[in-house]
Image (tube, rainbow, N blue to C red; front, side, top):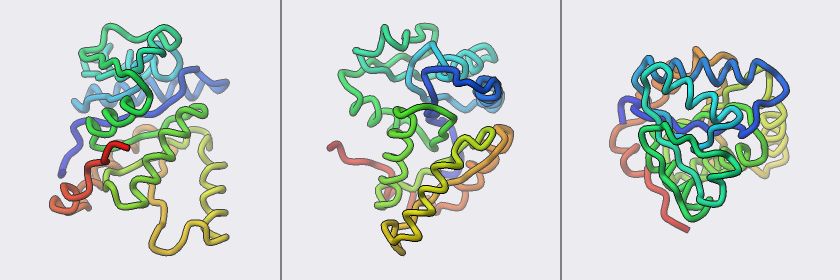
Length: 200
């Protein structure tokens, strides 16, 4: 993999209390569209999910939404996306999101966003994939998680050889350049060898 064609974005189904979060989601959606990078996301029309998807679509970009059947009404599935995949459960949603994406970005969000992010960090830690993972640290949102990961490392729960690797940026304008640098740094053979997660 030498270029990024699609990015999976994890983010909140609510807008959050800081207007900067919505602004960041819309700005990054615009950047994706302008660079012809497909958005892979959770399929909802509300919160930051709806903002980023709408921004991509409003600027002529392409979106794949992946949503479990039981969340179609709660998160209001965004029907104007080019591709809407409805899954029977959350596990299949996450599996398909992984398969379709060349990289992962975590915008601010709640427990669901955190769970999706940590799962990707775990899979990468265990050598199951080499796709880059990036924290969009808007107004320091992810600082508490970074502190916790450092704490786990200092107490040897994250041991040498099992480091947790991720990229951090503070501005959405830096996301795509950092991800492109990261994928170029992975030899093609290595990326192909460790790019598939077995179904649990």
